Image (spheres, rainbow, N blue to C red):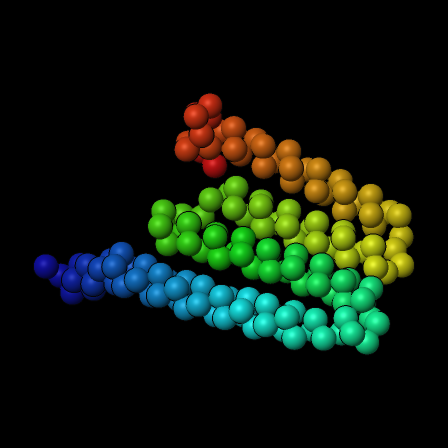
Length: 151
């Protein structure tokens, strides 16, 4: 075998075996970091409950709602990474779920600020589009009872 053929053989071995192992390891570490971040966020939300006693209930409620939505977005990212580790691919439905949670969180965050109506309409249009795509991918998913496509 020529040196070029041997080199190509080793390169293929590296790309086929080592790279997926490294990527899976990094995804596992990332899931751990995100879980720790969520734990720290939940602990911070519990510690912030002391603000109820000093009369800042409305501000605390605002921060709690926004933080809870961020936690849900993190949870969706973790679900996406877990699906990648299990299936070896990323499911489009999980990405759409994550985007929906983030956009809905942003839209709800506008309730506590001064906002422009066109920003709200744009956010609602983006959410409606993502919901439509979510239904479409669920319908066409190979895992769906009714679908026969790929998601």
